[in-house]
Image (cartoon, rainbow, N blue to C red):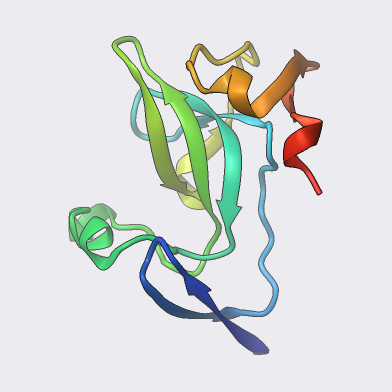
Amino acid sequence: MDRTRFFSPQAGRTLDMPRHSRARFGIGDVVRHRKHDFRGVVFDIDPVFANSEEWYESIPEAVRPKREQPFYHLLAENDESSYVAYVSQQNLLADPDGGPVDHPGVNELFEQFQDGRYRMRRSLTH
């Protein structure tokens, strides 16, 4: 399998990964966690796990996700609060409700909500 390496500031180290990775969701998609009761909008995607070892080790081993899959940064919400979440692809589903996400950061990153997804602000795209 063809592999590559990149430095992740968040992880604080160089990561070895497959050269190709396939993300199921895109920037602006509204998703729901498969096991926990929250949903959110994707605002960034890591091709493999790129967070700290402490974060990874804090997940109980029985439910710890595989590292070599996309991980998504979400502006997330549940019934009690809004926050930023970091979730593996295996734990996300398309949100069947398809409505907007009530998170204070949404307006900073996205212009509009249309047809069940958000459009990133033009000033933030390349």
